[in-house]
Image (cartoon, rainbow, N blue to C red; front, side):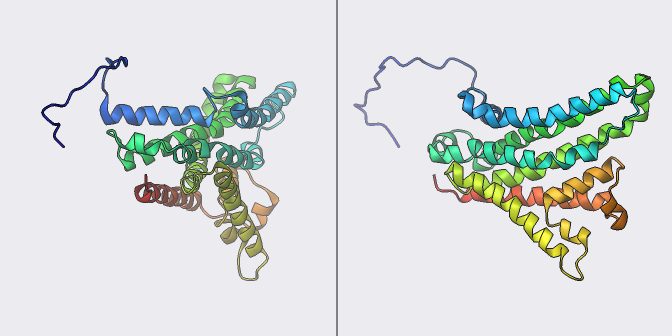
Length: 290
């Protein structure tokens, strides 16, 4: 569109931007960082921080109690990572259900997307930045209790140097489990939240999806001809729980009666679920009207 010859541009006193223009890369980083802040309620009222603070505190306090008990017993009380994860995974789902809509649904609710997409940001870049923000926050929440246990177990050992050498493989195991937890729960939460502009609906859909998956897997347990291990592959939370026991070389009575499949089966399954959810998020953003 060309301007008429008699057109005039008036300076009405707005402050001019004189900073660096970082282009698409800077916009992506800004979207990612703002998404991470939104996941923890930073820069918002205190009530927006209630769920993040609750989840972090509830996941860390048992670790501190376990480390204190192990220290008091002179290292005789074993620290079991799989047992700790068993009751914490549902808290990670709660964190995703409460906070992911702040990152994706709110942009639709307040019609911010047209403003974002008029700049250098493409729909794919927007989707990837928001997904990265969600997974970054989920990774922090999922890894914090594991890293605390890992560092604490070395610290309370009689010989920390020897304990560090013996526990070298544990660090890789907890990084793998934390990454897959963040990837699966974060990707599913982001994909589901992108389908609605109502935060309440997004929260309900995230919780409902995990509950339905758990119900289906539990129902299949009671059917003849369906093994417990095959049924749990339909429930990401059960798969993450069993994978945690396998990764940290721990076992339960149920695992002794029904040995789980290889670690690579769980890794491939969880990676695939997260990838499918990420593709669903991208397709949704591409087809979204703004």
